[in-house]
Length: 398
Ligand SMILES: *Cc1c(COP(=O)(O)O)cnc(C)c1O
Image (cartoon, rainbow, N blue to C red):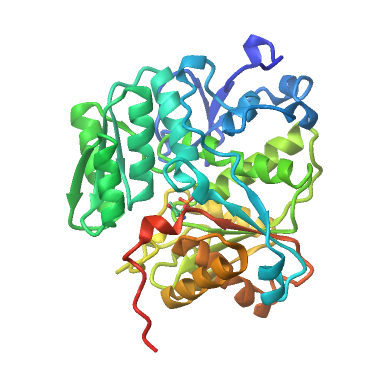
């Protein structure tokens, strides 16, 4: 158990990511009054005196191993299904095939519902329970719905899930099997978000939308702590990540900042790369245009359901992390993702999701753009299991 004094446990306050205004963390709060995401902040000056990387040895093999920098204090509210602490797999044959010195695959397909969404929803549902939420709701393109259903069930809280009616059958059956209330509708995740907002306004549902509550990003940030710990307390040169709502990239960036404040690392950072499908690439377009935020992407289309996100409330946070890190953003065709899924499988034994395929397909593109060098030790995020997309892979044209 943690040696942190009780008053320094959990979050110290919430902070608006746009204005810097601060708020009490011990209340349910969605977006800031400025309509921007809130971040949980911690008393890191105190925590750093009691929490060192060496303390992590022998701890529980899930994301609660980082409890000093997580917001949930009440042990009965720390819901757990075995999320996080996923393998970081060295992939020498993949590295050779792609002309890289060293590639690692962080295999998030090993999470309880088969995607890294479990990390975020584990924290969001745990914290909602701790703060007294009674009923939860989430718009989803798929995997977030499974994860919300699982953690709602684990915590004994009802969950309403609103998803597009082309959500993969596997995920629909999974959500139903986990006992959640599922509403399928015409439209994209942004349309589903409107329905959830109405439920929040009229029915008192607690809205778990990406970055519209402060705690999913706290779960996702544990990927940053894990990569650091699994590489033997150091960071790689580059991280390639498939961004939809962007919590994973934003969360890892926050983790690196916390690690620096605790004296675990210096000011060095990996180059952070965002990968999106050519059929829905608002962040790539904004990065190319040099704008601070992204414009809505019309007619979003891709089989990588987790990346079918035409607008993200955290777009400016993604763009900041990408730019400050000296990284970049690149768009990948669906067919190239599917091809890369096979390459990943052949060379590693990992059956990747299309989003993971997109990340691998980005390697040669980024090299050609001069943003990634063969000497960059690179961590590829496979954000989910390919099993969740069976039957969805585009048919080969040629
Ligand atoms: C949701 C999702 C993504 C996008 O993640 P963000 O952190 O929201 O950008 C990527 N891959 C998979 C498999 C997903 O389910």
